[in-house]
Length: 262
Image (cartoon, rainbow, N blue to C red):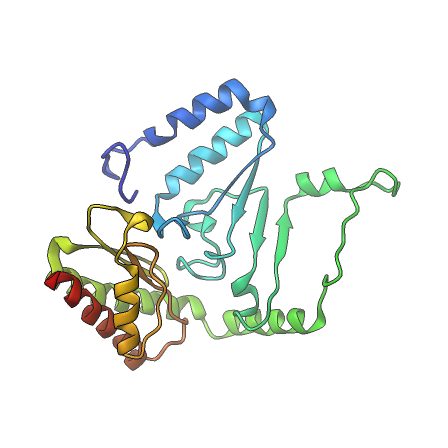
């Protein structure tokens, strides 16, 4: 996993980072209803990547104590990691799956919560006074649902996952060139349609303070990005043109050149 707290390599990792969680669940499992997390990519905390074996271990721990496992795939869902859903990379299925954003291709606000049979049975009763009833005003919004259906059809009919693999390959090429040029100044990682260039400084990740410089310098080149602290990340549309992708990475390169001078 990226920046392993125990300084392990994937080759010798036995997911020791979860030892404390395992101990906590063993002591408090009956008090825990669920565990919720973003699978494979911890987004807003700095695009932190981690291995699928972490999800597998958490799935095992949840099963052991009958704890629900919930994945927030609002960011990672619909191809962002190269699969339909990130959890497919790890073969660790959740009990509840939360989706949004990519469900409509970003055209209209819409979200959905998927549950397995076990969770569904917990909600369902023929007697209404025992059932869990929930609804809200915007449920089933026809425009958002139509946009979602159209987006899913495009996703399936135009082989979008293949396009994402090509996009990943190209972003790895561009980011590798930046790594060659700036060396230890940046750390690079790519997965699916997510490419991250983390600027090395005294303050790591989202605690960094270079985002404003990078943002303003990219705007000078006509590119709008939103770094998270020291984390510069690119998550382009799956159908982005090559010239547009090149323009983005050239803008990032331009911004990095000012940080080198400092």
